[in-house]
Length: 211
Image (cartoon, rainbow, N blue to C red):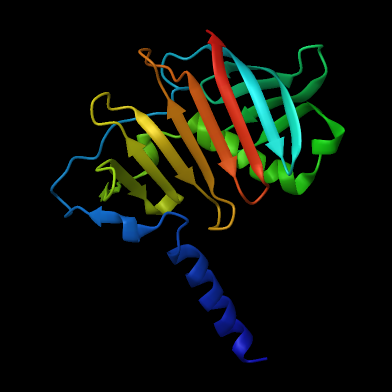
């Protein structure tokens, strides 16, 4: 029994020191050799609302339809996902620290799933460079700039030309990491957003229809 506290300490250390991003694929940049970039989620500065064609796959359960994401205040968004004939899957108010469910499609109304899904949406909607001082890496194969924010478990890929975010990886523990990719055409706002989380077997794609 005496070994249990030590086992708990070791477990906490293991979970907080490991990351879902393989640092063996990154080259660290010396501290002081770079300036921390200013960046934000595309849903923050200047964003009001947008309409997306949406596909969602959760553990092999496939949903498709239209999503409206509307900024309702500086600290909240309304997220509505329904199919083409008007059946609502999700109607959520997303805040920085919580969410309110107006309606959730019963097969998806599972507390464990919703807790992780909320964190994933929070990562998508609210992430910005105000979360701390990052470490900088260069991805060895792609030469992309990658910034790590250890205090909030966040990795950010920044496009060198535009200065905008191209990828995000965030997690509450190393097993529930969400990976978000932003694809752009000529416009500043992403034309396609891909979000995946292997913990809940989620693949979500948002294809921009209009703003």
